[in-house]
Image 1 (cartoon, rainbow, N blue to C red):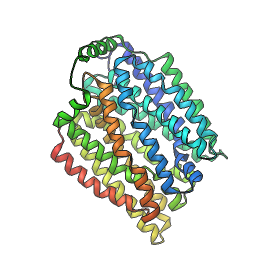
Image 2: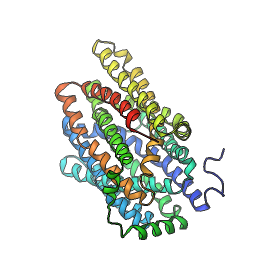
Image 3: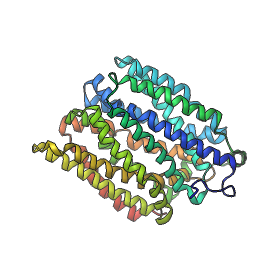
Image 4: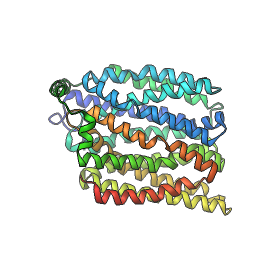
Length: 409
């Protein structure tokens, strides 16, 4: 089956963009995964505190989401590719600071520039996928792109498991070098389809005289309000425990980088295998039901995390790696059934101002993420490692109820 459609459904420029985006997904998945495996333990080594690490994770989350409404507005008004290219200087400056970090003087600007680059890049990436997709196939096409990311993730995790690197900063250099190839694809291959540019220009011209702002428009609609409330709550509930998972595993169980990579690879394999079927599921049964299925998998993830801690505390350390691996397999199923539906919904909140509405929704999700690193770090360090997981488990039960009562396709 041709997942990208035929020439009657998607024009040549859109088709070229989709293939380019897929290869960018592969490169990004491989280049970034080793970096992200060691990133939180790297912060933990510098700060020597899970709580302070949580503060820096929160800072990164704020910077990742805060600029998105304005990035989205620029993307709608001007050439989307040119706005996306603004990511490059922020990425290289941020990674350079992080590479040479020995103390907070370099760490803070590194976190700032790196996460600002992510805010710009995410808007461009998702808007090009949405703009280049046939409406009836958006679920499977988003699934395909994340399939590419997770193939790359698996390769990156295998690389970490080989244990051929003495200094984890080598992973930082690898990320910088390989992501350069991704940027070359963006510069020389991806282009704005003329039809989309013309459509966007007409839309932008037609809305400049509207008195109602995008913010008011989103909050005025009960359907959009319910969507945003759900995704903000979902982000908050999951991130209480998962925002500092890497640092927590390192601090609580003393896992090595190789063990963390082994556990993480099951997440990537599971997500990769089920990502495209997850997109099919969203297209077939609807976004609401797909999200409910996702939350049920999420419930099982946190049950396994809690069970793992109990057995480990009772002295059954032999079950630690197998159970954490099972939790990551279920987490992959959770992500595979969640991502396509979430991206379809969030990129289609407003048909006339897609990028700006996506930026606003991302900003609001950032509000949900904002306190979680601090909360999770505090609970882990001052109360118990397992406390955030118990709160997430209870929260997901509420999410399922909210979906069934207030959410509509």
